[in-house]
Length: 102
Image (tube, rainbow, N blue to C red; front, side, top):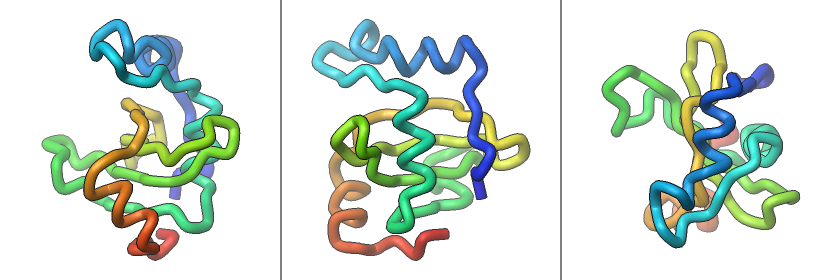
């Protein structure tokens, strides 16, 4: 899943400017998300239990970013919807190895 993750220009700009909307948030480069979704230890939640549209949630490490990312993906066309620096229970699950890689 998501071997072909891609970002349209508007959504890429949206994640690059997270700190404009959320003071103290980390701006995310789309390239980091490509690394995170290919992480062999990634966690895949498909569908994301918090999604109203059936999007998938992927949690994985980005070497370029230096931290774990949560990436929300449209499972039909593998387009990125949004992404953020992982925290809370998602980060704990990742660090504890709760993922199955798919």
